[in-house]
Length: 101
Image (cartoon, rainbow, N blue to C red; front, side, top):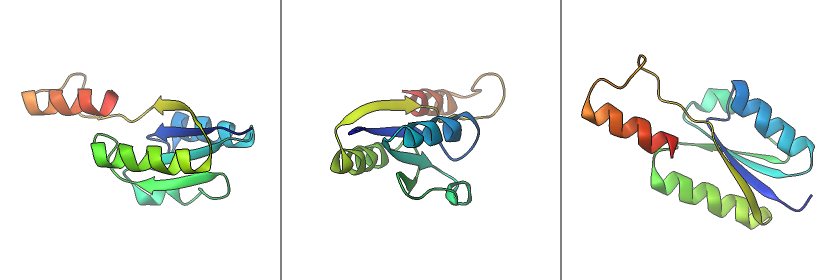
């Protein structure tokens, strides 16, 4: 498969499962994860990128890494911001939507 992908929040859980599946199917996958310890499994077709998925420069870096490997075929927005059922302040509300875009 001559395709690349970016998976945000891909260090564990559903994001990791998606990244592993895309790599197993032959894609190159750039995984953005804020916790570097959650990326110890990456390697081979999976490129680890530690950073905040809500940071535009991190997203740009991920896109550059993916496109350097193969045409970008998909982007999985799996990153999450936790802190209760709803963001409680305008700042947290904005952060929630930035991370989810």
